Length: 184
Image (tube, rainbow, N blue to C red; front, side):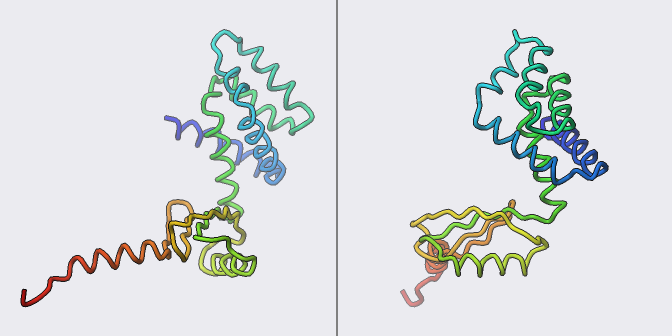
């Protein structure tokens, strides 16, 4: 059900922004709203509070986001509140952001390495990713995991390319266990 709600609302916002040619502005504003909500968990609690009326919640939305985002985005947030979908607001905003990134061919990757990568290594990885994927741009989150020993692990969506020494050693160990010693 949550996927259907986020898809329905996120898709509607995407279509309106595309139709009005405000996709970039709406994208930036929705990222701003999402970040604001993530930094203020009390705000989500307020929206979910059963003793606060819908009208009061709408007034809070309008007061907080007035002059910070467009009327379209404020109106969209008001609709979410009026339809009592505020418990799904994070999923709706996340769906919209992912939809726009896919539309604009912006990939999101997580690169995990055993040690800090140099700028040259990061540039080489970015170039390789751009050459081997459909994306024209990437947002990359770099992480360090010393247990990898060496190499890197690249994750884009649900796809993972594991070139770590840790994984290669695990494969080697499994293969060695399969070998039977002959003549014993």
